[in-house]
Every structure is written in C-alpha cells, then in structure tokens.
Length: 456
Image 1 (cartoon, rainbow, N blue to C red):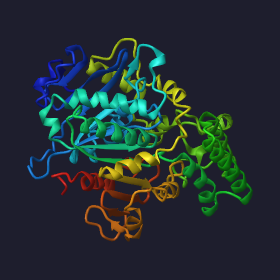
Image 2: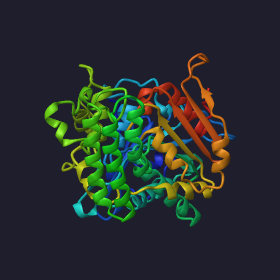
Image 3: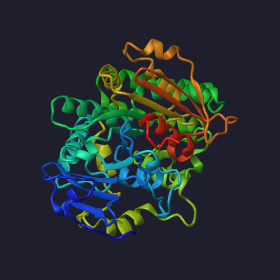
C-alpha cells in the first residue's frame, strides 16, 4: 500500500472544502486518491473514496469526466465491491486491473446508503427507509464535495449504477438536478447509467417464468406457479402493500429455484448449486438470501486460492491505509440493516423517475447483461416500453448497431440503440455483473457514454 497522510483537502484536486474537518479526510502522498466522511445528517455519516485517473487527457473541448458508482444490494459496499471487484484500479489481491474504468474517467465510490460498508449511523433509527431519503443524503454529499471545488465542477458527473443501485441513481439524478436548478449544487450532471437495474420489480418478476420456459429450464407447471405469484405481487403493488410484495417476491424466488432445478439468478446459464456462496442443499429452503448480492460477487469471480478475502482486506490493509475509520465501525456487517429498513421500498418501481430525467433532457443510459435473470433484459425492455417519454416511439424504431471490441469485427459483443438522450446497450455473454463478465466492451461503453478524451 502506498504511503499517505492526512491534510486539508484543499491541496488535492484544488479542493477547498471548508466544511470537512481534517479528521474526516485522507489523501495519498501523490494526491491521486482522497477519501473521507461527510455527516449528511446529524449522526449519519457517508464514506466516499475518489480516484484521480492517471490516464487523464486535458482537452478543453471534452472535459475529463467523473463516474460516481452506486452499488446494489441494497446495502452493498461500492467502496469495496465496485472498487476492488469490478472497476477500480486494484483487484482484491491489490494487483492492477487492466480494465479499470480509470482509463475513461475519475472514479468516485460511495458506501451508500448510510450503514453500508464503512458508512455508519450513530443511531439505527437514522437508516434510510426510502430511495428518496438515500438520494437526499447523496445530494448532501455531492454539495460538500463539489461546491467548493472548481476542478470537480468542470468535470461532468456520470452516475453509474448496478442492480438496486439503479433505483438510487434515478432518485439521485432527480434530487441533484433540482439542487442544481436551485443554485444549491455546483455540478454538471452528464447522465445517469442504469446497469442491470431493479427499476421495475413487477416487470422483472413477470419475466422470470416465461424466460426460463423459453430456455427449456422450467416446465409448464413451474411457469404457471411463477406467473401466479407474479400476479399476486402485481396486485399487492397496486394496493400499496409493498412489504407484503417483498415477502411474495422471496416466495417467488424459492419457487423459481424449485422448478428450475436451482437456476442461478445472476446468470441463467449456470446452476444455483454452483454458486460458492449459497450452493449447499441445507440452505436451499432459505431462498435467495437478501444480502447475497455482494457476497456472491466476491465469491463467484474471486474464488481462486490466491484471492484475498474481502472482509479481511477491508478490515485489514484497507482500514490501515484509510486511518479515519472509527474504531466501532466494521466493514461488511451492516448491509442487513439497510435491507430491512428498505423493505417497504424494495418493490416500488422507479419508471416515473426515468421519465422525469428524460423529460428534463438528462441523458439516460440503460445497459443489461444478456444472461441476467434477476434483472433480465426481457424485464428491462418491458419497463422501457412503459415510458411516457415523447421520444420513445422513435427510439423503438431505431435498428440496433452491433458492438465489437479491440478491432475484432468478427465477434459481436453487443448492440446499442440511441435516440436523443436515451441509449440502450445489450451486452452479450454477460450476466448481472457486466463490468466483470465483459470488461472490454464495458470499458468501451463507458468511453462512449462519457465521451472521454481518452476514448481510443
């Protein structure tokens, strides 16, 4: 780990954040990284970590962008999972990642909502209970980071999200835009990118049975049972019984597992039993555990004998490097608290927020892994067709353009369609975790979305 020291952040990235105390800020010796806490509400603290790209290209016509990464779960740690397992400069063995998104942008990771990862609350009643509350906290954090920083203000911010993080992303997009309009936030909002995002739970649960039936993974009996439970969820949502809908969602996932011989929710080409996290028969009855998203990502893609345990990494070398983590805060032990608090919001759709972003002229990018089940492309296309945006008909009439990578025009890696401020990327060969499973085309997509000066 490189040497670092604590100092006023005004010396790094030209920051002049007068509201942040020295005790809440850390910076690497060379100024390439900084991190800290923002008390977004009394006794509620969000942890953030910002990387300055070594590949930065200075181009006045194309300002260097910043990507804010929002993890799913809800309750997954962006500072750990998005950073060390997906797109950050180092992997979980602290080895350089060739496909880091730093090639295209500076990276800002946040452990959000409060009580995720290194973020914490001093009173458990302060954990957010809605997506909007999480967005308000994030907007407060952005005000602290951007308002006193002329360098950041020149860098367009792109909010990239994964899984449940997409619901946070669209609510943050609306909240940040309103704060910008009101003169409360000095920030250029470049766009909102939704990766395999849980935008419309109803559309996703209706997609599961038919998709698996088409894949020869489920019988007609299983299809009927899954469709029946999806209809029950639809009725509960219509009646505002959101917590009951979350309970039925769990019941439906158990049924999907039972009637598909344990398909993998994050990649329908695989078996749930092959999942190194939950793949033992004694745990089948427990269903698709609610905090499994983040643990799955760690175990599925970093299960080699040499892979460092992420819990040990975050509470060992990383904690030692950061220095500012309170003694009573342990990484990784709080995501269940976040999920429990959001039970009433978990199944609520956020299609209306996507419509609002589009109507305001904000760029919206949707990208989806071909092999994902839980946030299937079939479900994403279903909620996309529910948009009331006046450009939808024209968007749907556009023929997708094939995508290739590294000059290989013989292997199709995906497709993309765009009209005005809406884009969709279909990523072939990827499941739920697109940056991990298709890193090359993901990096190319980020460059296209952000119009990075380093888009070679």
